[in-house]
Amino acid sequence: MDITRWYGYSLIAVIGCLIVRQTCIFFFAFVRAYGLFYLLKQVFYPVLFKRRNRSDSITRSQAMIILIYLAANGLLLGLHIRTAAELQSRSSKLAMINMVPLFFGGRMNFWIDYLGITLQAYYLMHHWVGRVVVAQGLIHSGLAIAASMRWDHSQNQISGTIAATALLSIAIFSLVFIRRRFYETFIRFHFLLAATLAGALVVHIDRRNHRVVYLWIALGCWCLNFVLRTLRMIYRNLGGSGNEVQIDTFSDATEHITAVHIRVPVSRAWTFRAGQYVYLWFPCMGLRSWSHSHPYSVAWWDTPPSGDRTISFLVEPRNGLSRRLMRSHFTRLALMDGPYGVDAGLGDYETVLLFAGGIGIAATLSYVRHLVEGYGQRRIRTRRLSLVWILRKQSQ
Image (cartoon, rainbow, N blue to C red; front, side, top):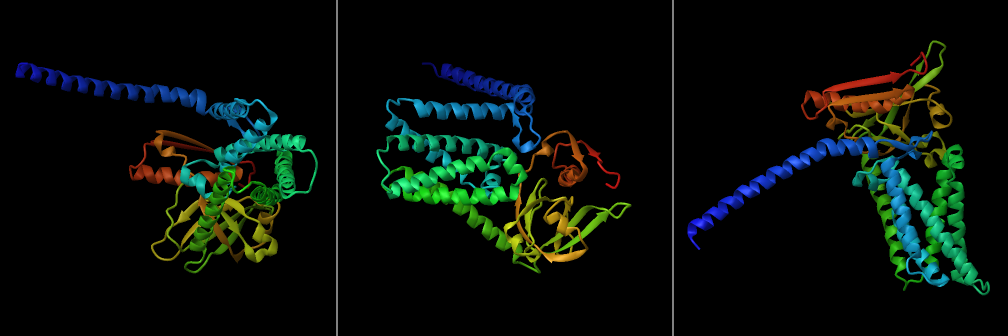
């Protein structure tokens, strides 16, 4: 073949590659500009089931994921099943596999921040995966009882009964009206029942059975989360001068306290981000305070040239701990667990509109500061920021 023909083919190939490259760039830009907008507007943002508690609300995209998850588990539960014994075995396998993400942790979860999952999405996942595990576990228990000829008080039967009872108790105590009305009690019982379930399964499952691998993975995830949280708490709280917090109160014209201002010195290096929150313990407020932890959104932070950095929280006094905090101006020792929370990425939008009602302004102030500083430093795309604050009381 003539060498000039090779040259012509090569030149055509180069030009063709450039055309394909530019076409792909144009196509993906078009999809991002219009397709992503459509998906956000029609799929990701609209709420399908709106609840009073935002964490229980479900968007269209979340509903689709839940339906796919339920359908997949239903299909796997019945695929190629011919006898009750096979269904009993399959349900136990699926329950053990689905149990792994449940042991990532509860509210104070290191994993969800690392994976970039919002707390609302994790709560939703935890609720639905938990329901599937309860259903599959009870199916396994019911078939095992039906297949059992007699009760011989064996280790396998006793541990299986304890595990089934713990599963059923978790389902009952997790009902919405119980969870909301007795939240602190629910948290303690939920942890104790989960620990009881794990202990019963350790005894119930044969060491030679491959299902035990999923149990050890689940327990390993929980233990690693606990260790990482503990190490971070030690790092945050044992350095410098300690967390001697200063607590002030805001009152209206009738001397009624409407808000509590908590300032916590931070001796360790901490890169503050919008949307973060921490859990505070006040051990000097009695023995019961060791078992109480309360999440507080970081309202703002101060970084003086010299001295300790401080982070501030605004709290509306209600029943329990916040009611005790508002009694007077005082300084107390606090232990801090955190920070937690994922940045919502508001800096990617040119126009941002924030709404806050009453004390909810505390959760938006960090975003306002982040956007204003980012605009001044030209690190974000936001050019217009509007904040609507609905005052429920004149004193606010």
